[in-house]
Image 1 (cartoon, helix red, strand yellow):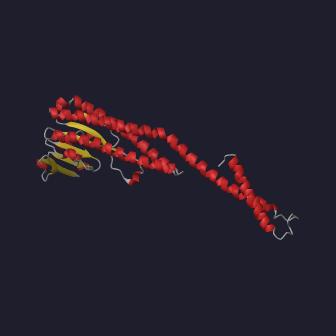
Image 2 (cartoon, helix red, strand yellow):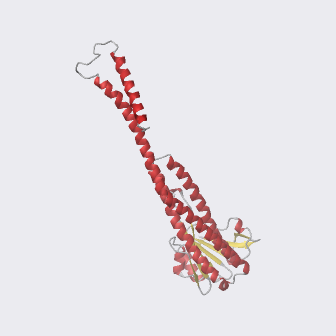
Length: 306
């Protein structure tokens, strides 16, 4: 699917005509669209397919007529993912007066305050990189909130599914760290070759800011990953302790029932027993049962088992 955009009044808006569209976005292109990109814009077929591969690492390549860049970004989260935040890839092909974007699934590109003032194609190119960094930061905040919520549930529950959810979050952060680090290497390479791309001074300064933002994003993901990894053992211990408390409670209830049952069973044997002809024997036996329960509770408290 092809979408066309243009820069108008310092904003990016949809364009009605491809001939005057400096920004082309191909979402999950079919074979005909791939052939069009390869033949019309001289895109390398391997690089084009790599842009649609979610497992492809971020990288940059110089072609005779354009710059090919593959960038990592968070994948749109779905409830079916079971707390697994996945990573995707998309490609940007920067020409002198045109920007071609190829991505495997559709997601919002040109929204946010950083797209309110756009004047050139290189500036749009750099702000799309910032959008990916910002997207990672927002997902990290969501992961942190989910982690806090799961911690509270683990403290009050013995179910393994909350631990499994935390494990999925920890696994997601590992993938995020790898993707963000891959973007860092790509941006450093982009900075080194900024002169080849005719970036002006403002664009180069913006690229420096992007590197700082991406490094901060990586540090934040690293902290969250270390916290989750370091506390997993403690959370497992909490679940085990909750189970021990429950078993202790069940033992108290069981013994509390067994003691009076034992007393009553002694007086219900089919042999001659004391109080057999006494008219108040029933109440005496009940009283002995209560005394045995109270006595055992005092013994339990004396041993400090409660």
